[in-house]
Length: 142
Image (cartoon, rainbow, N blue to C red; front, side, top):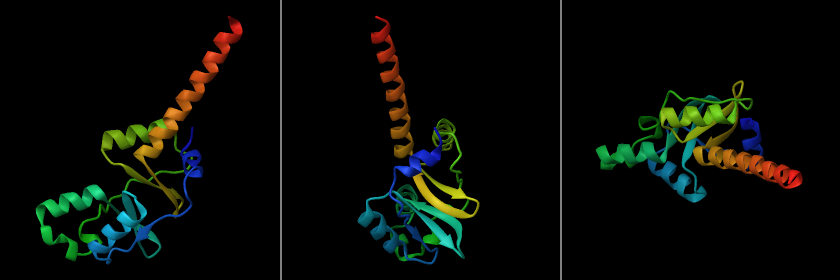
């Protein structure tokens, strides 16, 4: 299965933010939309990603962090995926590199963002489909 199939099951709305936005506003957007990360866009390009985990780590070091801008907390070196990426390879990368959100690009165009939960759900669905097929074959042969 390819990542484009996972994106097809998700809302087309992509929540983004700009690097100069106050961190307190980023927290409000994450909470309002019940999401775990925002893609940081500057000059129509990905400048970074800010996740709940980034915010927690920063807050643990500096409680006044919420007055600073997103750019001071975001992850700047963003790993991205492509719609043609294999689901298993993406799951392996996200697990081994220990991140939970992957922006998906087609060239320089942001198509969406997938979470580790989206990837695991799709993988489970694929396994359940294979299991159903095997059960049907066993019953038909029996």
